[in-house]
Amino acid sequence: MSKPKPQYLVSSDSIGFLGRPEQFVRLWKEYFDDKTLDGVEIIAFKPLSRLSQLVSTLEKNNILVLSFHGKTGGENLLNFSGRIIMTLVNFCIVNTKNILINFPGIEFLSHAPYFEKNPIKQIIFKYQPKKIWIENHLYGKKGVEEAIKQIIIYRESGINTCGMLDIFHYVAHSIETFKKDWPSIVEELKLYILLKDKQGKQLFTGIHFPIGSRLGDSLPIDSMTDEMLELFAKRVIPHIARVVFENQQTIPGLFFSTRKMIEKQKARNKRIIERLKKTGVIIKS
Image (cartoon, rainbow, N blue to C red; front, top):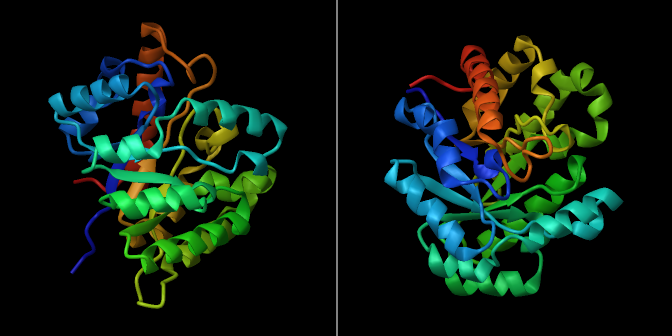
């Protein structure tokens, strides 16, 4: 019996911090209508009223909101520019307690350093979210190992917990040799995904696959060959339950988009989605 295809999600980062719900619908609705995409991972930007409007608009368009991306924590672990950017971004995200109280049926994702904080642990233990996803924060193996530690802690505390392995976070420290090292990177990713806890449960069941135009936090998708994508599809996709396509845009799209910018991004998205289907990263329904 063949394994079910993964859930495919797209992040709301494609419309930026100040993006409007109808812009997201304009960009992505056709891919939900034809079952290419299954849901959305929303970055939980303030204010709460605006976040609620985004959720409501998507639901009215039969687009499922499956997960929220909360604050990341770990700003002090980044380089100077990264520290400034993430401090600003995290300030603009709704706090975890308000997310869990107002949206109890939606899963919650954050990075390992955030889940490591004792006050956040207490909030998670109290409000018992449907599921939490713990993402690797630091580059390379160290980030993955720190995520594994937190996954185990939360599972042992009775929280429904899965790991989300962000590919860019894993390779960002060696992006200069990215293409040459891709076969070994894929094998390393597969090994991490196949790791299990003491109960035999897979640690990482999700992948963040960033396809955005802001290369500071995205894979260089346009310079990746079809062979690279096919290798990833063959070695990794069969072993995961969820793929999230992050899609951060270059400034000013990181913050807002005009109609012309949305149309340009829509054309780019179509080109990339078709490549991902052709190479098997997206398994056709």
